[in-house]
Length: 370
Ligand SMILES: Cc1ncc(COP(=O)(O)O)c(C=O)c1O
Image (cartoon, rainbow, N blue to C red):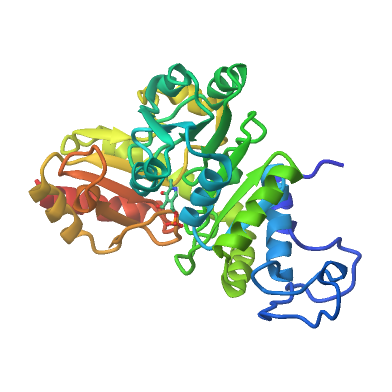
């Protein structure tokens, strides 16, 4: 019997209903295990190699993603593992020029230094599909952070696989609840689990899922050798938070759509970026590969002065970075540098508050910003 997706998420990583034992999985902190003689004879030996709490979490992630999953200390640790395990000197990697800026920094710094050629192309219009010549890997981020550009995953996969290029999708903004890149043909999906997947702004984690045990094994070897291992406590908390993903994200996406429409109709807002709006350049593509459009809405107030006044005037929404949490946040993205956005560009993360309260707060702050 095929169960509803929400039920699958809720039960992911828990045993069958008939099995005896505690509801909550055990939390294992041990850094070492009794393991005499031949280490290969033991399932558990040392805490950098394996941990039963990781295994439960990775089983849950694997179920949601549709392939074996490997958990990492952060989204960036997961990103670096894929880049490091897949690329060697002389390879070409195609990155979105609007990817999360730290990924571009890592590529331009570390990858270039070890002799990997980094080629940039926009997410918009599937431009990466026309930049694949001689490449080893194409890295896709859709919807992208913070501009929420969307590309067609199936189309990129088709072009890439025809040229023997592997495809990685950074699925952070969507989560596997809204979009499942492995089912759309990608070879790897990578994500920051610091964001909506766990949603409580109380941990930093990341993961990679892929299509074969061989690929997952190479990532585990990378994690073991480079030491980018997740903390057991964070992993346990992440698993606990996963159960409410459908409830949280369903409400957040619904409210984000309402907020995007409100901002779109507001004369004080120059531009709104949200794939759920019919005038988003890739709205139709997003509809074809996402179940809903996510919890982040970006918009442009044109000047730093107006954006600062807007942020200062919010009384419910907190000014903070990151996104996907149950509490709404907003920030002026240009304060960090690195993104091709104007000084008045706001990235807004819609939380689980009643949407009337979010609209009330945003409306009041827009009024103050003039
Ligand atoms: C799209 C995307 N990928 C990766 C990361 C890195 O994740 P972390 O901060 O967990 O290292 C982020 C963080 O904001 C992100 O937005």
